Length: 109
Image (cartoon, rainbow, N blue to C red; front, side, top):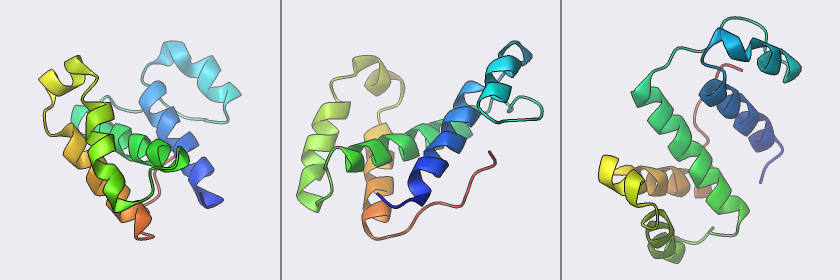
Protein backbone atom coordinates (compact mmCIF):
# COMPACT_ATOMS: atom_id res chain seq x y z
CA UNK A 1 0.00 0.00 0.00
CA UNK A 2 1.16 3.49 -0.69
CA UNK A 3 1.87 5.85 2.20
CA UNK A 4 -1.19 7.89 1.25
CA UNK A 5 -3.68 5.06 1.77
CA UNK A 6 -3.51 4.90 5.59
CA UNK A 7 -4.31 8.62 5.71
CA UNK A 8 -7.12 8.07 3.24
CA UNK A 9 -8.62 5.22 5.26
CA UNK A 10 -8.52 7.36 8.41
CA UNK A 11 -10.49 10.11 6.71
CA UNK A 12 -13.04 7.61 5.40
CA UNK A 13 -13.41 5.92 8.79
CA UNK A 14 -14.03 9.30 10.41
CA UNK A 15 -16.74 10.09 7.86
CA UNK A 16 -18.42 6.77 8.53
CA UNK A 17 -18.15 7.11 12.31
CA UNK A 18 -18.61 10.76 13.23
CA UNK A 19 -22.26 11.28 12.34
CA UNK A 20 -23.71 12.81 15.53
CA UNK A 21 -22.67 15.35 18.15
CA UNK A 22 -22.53 12.65 20.84
CA UNK A 23 -19.36 11.39 19.14
CA UNK A 24 -17.63 14.79 19.11
CA UNK A 25 -15.12 13.88 21.89
CA UNK A 26 -14.07 10.79 19.95
CA UNK A 27 -13.80 12.76 16.70
CA UNK A 28 -11.66 15.40 18.39
CA UNK A 29 -9.42 12.71 19.91
CA UNK A 30 -8.91 11.43 16.36
CA UNK A 31 -7.97 14.88 15.10
CA UNK A 32 -11.26 15.92 13.55
CA UNK A 33 -12.58 19.37 14.33
CA UNK A 34 -15.89 20.59 13.05
CA UNK A 35 -19.44 19.37 12.82
CA UNK A 36 -20.45 15.74 12.35
CA UNK A 37 -20.65 14.40 8.82
CA UNK A 38 -24.07 14.23 7.22
CA UNK A 39 -25.66 10.78 7.12
CA UNK A 40 -25.85 10.13 3.39
CA UNK A 41 -26.63 6.46 2.58
CA UNK A 42 -25.37 6.64 -1.02
CA UNK A 43 -22.10 8.28 0.02
CA UNK A 44 -21.66 5.82 2.91
CA UNK A 45 -22.09 2.89 0.49
CA UNK A 46 -19.28 4.20 -1.72
CA UNK A 47 -17.00 4.90 1.26
CA UNK A 48 -17.57 1.41 2.67
CA UNK A 49 -16.82 -0.13 -0.72
CA UNK A 50 -13.60 1.88 -1.00
CA UNK A 51 -12.49 0.73 2.44
CA UNK A 52 -13.39 -2.89 1.71
CA UNK A 53 -11.37 -2.77 -1.52
CA UNK A 54 -8.35 -1.33 0.32
CA UNK A 55 -8.61 -4.01 3.00
CA UNK A 56 -8.75 -6.73 0.32
CA UNK A 57 -5.54 -5.27 -1.13
CA UNK A 58 -3.95 -5.21 2.32
CA UNK A 59 -4.74 -8.90 2.71
CA UNK A 60 -3.10 -9.75 -0.60
CA UNK A 61 -6.06 -9.85 -2.99
CA UNK A 62 -4.13 -7.93 -5.59
CA UNK A 63 -4.56 -9.99 -8.75
CA UNK A 64 -7.51 -9.99 -11.13
CA UNK A 65 -8.03 -13.73 -10.55
CA UNK A 66 -8.76 -12.93 -6.88
CA UNK A 67 -12.09 -11.32 -7.79
CA UNK A 68 -13.94 -14.61 -7.47
CA UNK A 69 -12.60 -14.93 -3.94
CA UNK A 70 -13.63 -11.37 -3.17
CA UNK A 71 -17.18 -12.11 -4.33
CA UNK A 72 -17.19 -15.31 -2.27
CA UNK A 73 -16.00 -13.56 0.89
CA UNK A 74 -18.52 -10.75 0.52
CA UNK A 75 -21.16 -13.41 -0.15
CA UNK A 76 -20.70 -14.74 3.39
CA UNK A 77 -22.48 -11.63 4.72
CA UNK A 78 -26.12 -12.50 3.97
CA UNK A 79 -27.63 -9.27 5.29
CA UNK A 80 -25.30 -7.20 3.13
CA UNK A 81 -26.23 -9.21 0.05
CA UNK A 82 -29.92 -9.13 0.84
CA UNK A 83 -29.95 -5.35 1.28
CA UNK A 84 -27.50 -4.50 -1.52
CA UNK A 85 -26.94 -7.25 -4.09
CA UNK A 86 -24.71 -4.99 -6.24
CA UNK A 87 -22.28 -4.17 -3.45
CA UNK A 88 -19.71 -6.86 -4.37
CA UNK A 89 -19.51 -5.42 -7.87
CA UNK A 90 -18.88 -1.96 -6.46
CA UNK A 91 -16.07 -3.28 -4.25
CA UNK A 92 -14.52 -5.14 -7.19
CA UNK A 93 -14.67 -1.97 -9.28
CA UNK A 94 -12.73 -0.04 -6.63
CA UNK A 95 -10.29 -2.94 -6.31
CA UNK A 96 -9.61 -2.83 -10.07
CA UNK A 97 -9.11 0.95 -9.92
CA UNK A 98 -6.68 0.68 -7.01
CA UNK A 99 -4.71 -2.06 -8.77
CA UNK A 100 -4.46 0.23 -11.79
CA UNK A 101 -3.04 2.96 -9.55
CA UNK A 102 -6.12 5.15 -9.48
CA UNK A 103 -7.15 6.30 -6.02
CA UNK A 104 -10.47 8.03 -5.60
CA UNK A 105 -10.50 11.75 -4.90
CA UNK A 106 -9.37 12.67 -1.42
CA UNK A 107 -12.15 12.84 1.12
CA UNK A 108 -12.69 15.53 3.69
CA UNK A 109 -11.05 14.51 6.93
